[in-house]
Image 1 (cartoon, rainbow, N blue to C red):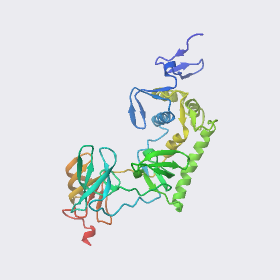
Image 2 (image 1 turned 45 degrees about the vertical axis):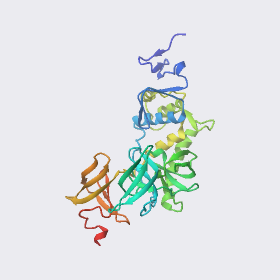
Image 3 (image 1 turned 30 degrees about the vertical axis):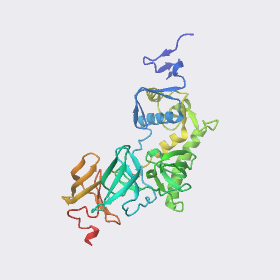
Image 4 (image 1 turned 60 degrees about the horizontal axis):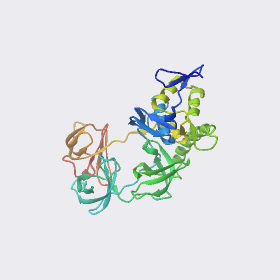
Length: 371
């Protein structure tokens, strides 16, 4: 038998009528070679991973994003629900969690050691060999803020969850709370996600018509896609082969993709045609990417000696994500809101500046203390 005709780069094989992706070599059988590919936003270089359905699904999502079929989910869709109500204040000695901008996660075992004159808090954050002091933090849910050490959720609660922190919320139930105050979530569609930070969870009011409309709209789109994939899942495994998905992309629908385009993307990312794809997860990526009502999460920066001049905020920032600590002048102010403690949140295009009740050198005209 003559050797097959291969493309110069070795990625495609001629069948006599068309080019198809070349089969993996014997030593690569059952493996995916990810060469300079992108998985869920992270560049993976020269890495060989097992034929794991989750990894393959992420790779497929990356390919679909590059082909423009799925939009990157880097913004959070607005929800028909209120945010978790945080306490109005803490006292000295209270145990809290601190959201470390450096570690990008909540740190527990922190303690409030002082309440500053401007309404901010001084806390101690235990590290491996020392205790670090944060001199001015506020209550919140964004990086650089503090929250209660005890979570507002418990097993059995019905919740909305920002699935994989990808920007789209799905309904589910809290199955258990882990030792680090993260949670295991069982989604309504049967998917399970563990180690979910409670900052990604919102309460779900099932008695709200708005909530039910939101769930029904999402569920209808998700169910339709899942049922389409179910046709190819003959053994109810929850996965389909990349070969079957290749056919879906190139042969079905009103506007199928070209074989060459899909082959190029699959070959570049290293997706073998016998790899298994978790189509339920893929459906979440696909339905979530259609979100239209989105609001970008802005970092919150604590500032003191604040004043407004020419429609811009000036003052001294404790930990600006780009400028660090020191004097700052903001871009034009969009709006200012006050909470029950008279703490101000000054919103600009890219940042929310937080000013404690007495953190102003010249308070705005609408400051609660002026009334």
